[in-house]
Image (tube, rainbow, N blue to C red; front, side):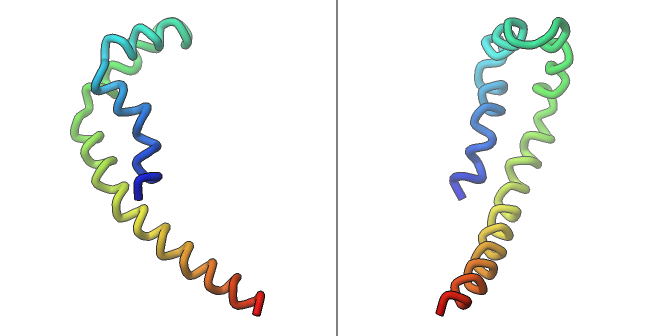
Length: 77
C-alpha cells in the first residue's frame, strides 16, 4: 500500500510548496509551464479523488498479484 502512494510524493510537493515547485519548474521546463500547472495545482477536488481512488486500485493490484504468483508458484512443484 505505501508504494501505491509513493507516486504522489512529487505531486504532493506541488501542493505543499507551490511557489518553490513553480520556481523549479521554470528552471527545468519550457517557458509557460508554470502557467500551465497553476490550474492543475488549484484543482483540489481532483487531488482528493486521486488519493481516494489509489486505495481500491492498490488493493485490486495486490489481489491480482497474489493470484498470478500462486499460479506461477504451483508450476514449480
